[in-house]
Amino acid sequence: MTLVSQVQSLIKKEIVLEWRSKYAINGIFLYIAATVFICYQSFKKVDPITWNALFWIIMLFAAINAVAKSFMNESKERQLYYYTLISPQAIIISKIIYNFLLMLLLSVIALFFYNIVFSNPIGDLFLYLVCVVIGSLSFATAFTMISAIASKAGNNATLMAILSFPVVIPVLMAIIKLSKNAMDGLDRSVSTDEIILLLGINVIITATSLLLFPYLWRE
Image (cartoon, rainbow, N blue to C red; front, side):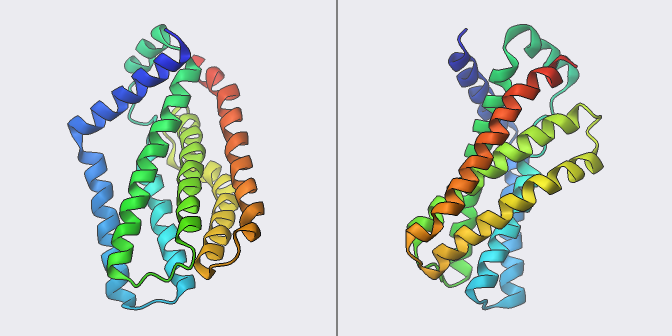
């Protein structure tokens, strides 16, 4: 099988397994709906800066629950079976793509609920949607690789928190600044630097994942 066909098969496998169980995805949906409702009951009305901060806090913890467990639910027997059939590059690429699609779905749903309970203060909706897409990709790439490393260390939650901090903080800072520009309705050229920075971080993390994951996989 070629790399592309392997990736397609693995993504299909992830979707089928998720659709059969539904426990994880339903739990995340419940978390998003409950968190948005609690924010509404607590604040009733928020200014645009708080609106934006709350949204990305919700998405950060949704990413931790959804993406960070990518490899933690894989048994050693299943990983050994994969090792005999497919390349490690196909594994990590399929995980990143699947987690990106999952995060994008969660982000759209969260934004929909958010707009229902709170008034929409977004000045440039298109730019904010671009930020949501890039943010979903950033969370997927960062947490997928971190999950792979943590799974090889006995699923150590402390190690995952330590590894996540230096990666997620600069990503969050860039995302919040980009989304703030969209909230204020600034000219899109002002946000070029943040978009390039986020895309650059994603390229670096993805390239690092492709280089390092085969060595992790052999362990």
